[in-house]
Image (cartoon, rainbow, N blue to C red; front, side, top):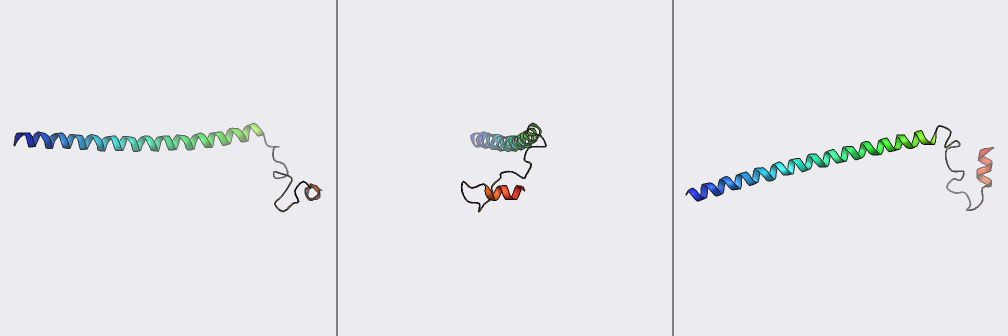
Length: 80
């Protein structure tokens, strides 16, 4: 009877340890995800700051979907 009690106690302690490790791992994953999200937002802001406000005048590329390949005349018309 005594051995069964020790086994049950050890199994319970092991179960508690596994649960605690799982909760710690989940917390770590959440923290890493949050840190990664913050890093991405910081990188976006740094890129905007580095490029300056004059970058992107004209809303980006001179061509649009549907323009003929290698022909910038439609883009030139839009810029007039």
